[in-house]
Image 1: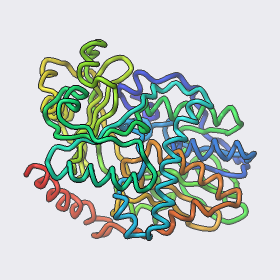
Image 2: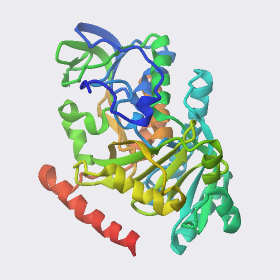
Image 3: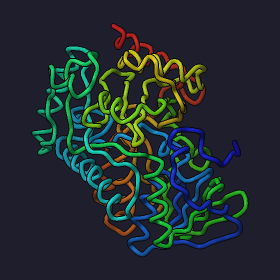
Length: 425
């Protein structure tokens, strides 16, 4: 596999074609340089171009190569941190405003798909599922909290209704969200990039941003060229590296893994999830799954906090799948892949500035499908001079992972061992 290609996955095997973009050579000028062509970077570039800015988008590998093109594809409101914990971090009014932005982000996914005719297999409906009695209590609390915030699309599902929707006895209850949904994340990202290109965004793949310097203009250095710009937007997340080393202290890359079964056929697939919704349980190490448009089950359920890619990923994830759906014990696995998502210590998103005209987006912590898109829109607002909504996120306090460069990951592994044991018990 050439270094620049997408990793082998169900998503890359079913991706729509998008013209490869040449690496940057020489010096170019732009109003805004965006680094990282995942959903956040593509959305930022698109929304900036809609406002008339000249935008250059730099991507080290291919558009959607990282987490944006590999994820579980579930689009949800809110954040990885619970709303009541977020309230404790920033206060009730700011937390409410952030919640409203997240809901807008969910609606923006539909709007972008419609406006730009992005073919990405969007399906309505998502459910969080209770494995233990305490999970049911959490679902009820989440529903009541959302209702208090004016979000009325949640419904508690239990008993035979639950089992008729999802063909497993593993779950005690579910909280169905008719406003959330799921999609093909790589095709969604590619669609955003295609829309940005149509509006005049210049995209360079195979181009790593090495460093930046200066102000008015800012100069972004790459191996074979430079971008001179008035504004810089950093959307590299765990891959940003030395281009903005200070950002790496507050996030850490966590490996997550997904399998795709062989095609099940329409009837057998529909028997698993009658309404085609996406599902995720409430364990700390979650299982999540959904049906693809060609009647496969896509199932994710393992993470690696060590930073190492474990062996036998397909077999171990398949074992978790069969624990949920014993009736799939005879089904083969056609694809198995993984990638890294960026988490913060408090699981809240980390947006802000490194300088007056240098913006960054990171720390989506597994809630990126909807949040990355609205984050790009907020960047465009801020660059255009209306930064109130973007600056709400800067009120969220973030601390570095303890242990410094060498010890923070072993410390995280030990902390996560506690939560693994809690799930088991």
